[in-house]
Length: 300
Image (cartoon, rainbow, N blue to C red; front, side, top):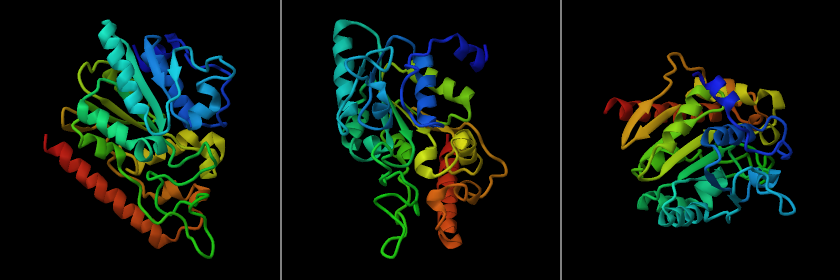
């Protein structure tokens, strides 16, 4: 069965009434993720776009059709570890899953995420990366790309956008010896579905999934371009698709003739001010990181 037929047969476990922005790739990612996971799932969603859009509910009504807890911004993984331990004590198998933004994963919540990975807690932790704290008006996070104009890295006489490069969180998590690490894109749904399914089979250790989710509102693009941006990120090697199982790296989609990163970044208003020299720095980092990834995949 192909992934389209599979998804058509699965129940949508996200309320049709949540208030995510038009073109929100994170909403699409969450809906698809829960279709694959099914009803035997407990979700943890910290403050962020998906919590703010109503997934954790209004007036005691749930925004999801599975149990969902709103954690703190900094303790999603530890909360889920406790929930998983409770169900294990009861002798019940259930998918315990976090769906957290990049700020709650790479910044505020990294301590608890790192701890859960080091302990080998048997949870699925998913980071939807829209490169910033979007729910509160787009502040920079450590996964925001260098040069980005945000409310905390504005462009003006005293500031010229973010001065630091994007943190490579999937690679950092791979170095934790997680049971499973993978990068996912809403532009390549067959790969997306397969990786969620693989994470569901892990019975020992943490699965970490990192989804690149373009944000038209924060990035300054037309809402209809979300999937095109997600595809561009793959085709430029800005966000390569790969997975790591028990320390072994595998590139899932090798782009033979990658496009320059400018073909992606020049589409975005948040990079409108960035010079060619600064773009070249992002290209250099992209090439360097992909070279490392290829070397790791070739070493298996």
